[in-house]
Length: 164
Ligand code: RP5
Image 1 (cartoon, rainbow, N blue to C red):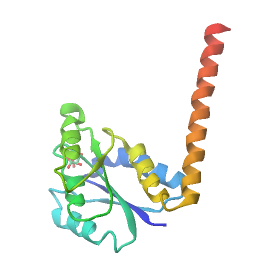
Image 2: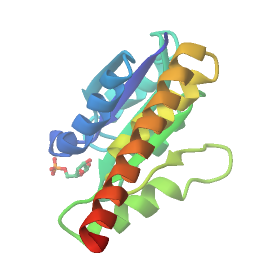
Image 3: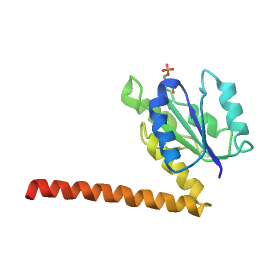
């Protein structure tokens, strides 16, 4: 199976990416995770993106806060699918990162998930890999069914509390 490459702009983003890694691990998807910044380590971020396909990656996830150019700069240097996670920082509640990540010019797409959307980034990367992997598609279907059951159990508990 192809690997998922995870890049974050700072180790301060790690709590969000831990959810990404946990979700990938729960689906037995191999991944690598790095701290490379579009602004502080532009050469390392560029080299990672340029070599990603040859290094066995199938999807890349890039997470950054503030003026979040990481996902866009990674996408500029690869034709692998790139998923952007805008991270909430102390100012502007993550709207700064959301707009910086999502508003890509035509030609260089970034599939942007919600602010701090670490779980969905992992699931979207899994769904991309599952296009050519029936076993992974089955695992994703089972996870969906389990999540559905959890919600219905909560509804049943609520109905029991409200209606006796
Ligand atoms: C961004 O700036 C990082 O992705 C992080 O979200 C934010 C703050 O970084 P630190 O100052 O905590 O290293 O580049």
